[in-house]
Image (cartoon, rainbow, N blue to C red; front, side, top):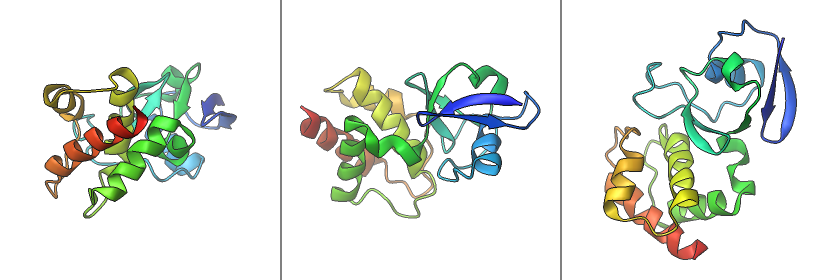
Length: 152
C-alpha cells in the first residue's frame, strides 16, 4: 500500500511500489485526464505536477511520488494560473483532437508559475517535450501569451 497526496487528498493505492504513477492515477484512482502516450517520457501526454514541477507520470514510480504533492488536470482549474491557461486554451481554439491537451495545459501552467511573461524561447523550451500530432503549436504559444496577460 502506497499513500499519495493527489489533488490535495491523501489516498492509498494498493499496488507494487514500482507501478508508474500514471497507472495508479488512471486505474486505481479513476483520474483518467492524465493520458498514456508513449510510456517513455517523450510525448508529454502524461504530464502532472509533482511538488509544482511538470513530471512525466508514465516513468515516475509511485514510491517516488509518495511524499509529494501531486496535481492532475482534474484539479488544475482550482489554481488561478491553471484556470487562466484553460480559459486561454478555449479562447484561442487550441484543441483539435484533444489527446495531448491535458499534458500541454499542465506544462503551460508550470511555465507560467515560474515565468509570468515568457518569451517565445521560454515557451518553446518549456513545451518542447509535449507532442501534438495535430500540430497546434502556434495556437499553444498564442494561448500561453494570452494566459500570461490574463494573470498579469
